[in-house]
Image (cartoon, rainbow, N blue to C red):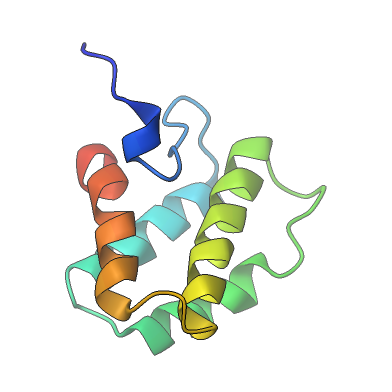
Length: 97
């Protein structure tokens, strides 16, 4: 399997280290990227499910949730458009979903 240039992907899905929440995050993000749910719906679910994961989930889940939170914060603060947000999420997730 060819190595990916990590600079092209803002985060990794840590496919070898899975948890129930990690799987749920992937599923909800896939649904958002497929336009099955809105960003607001994704954020409502994501915020409720991940607000207290420190020390409760594997590091891979914490890392992914943190990266998603950072990208959403950049969007919320006007540093990215929703199209930018989708583009940042799409490469990593489309290869690993």
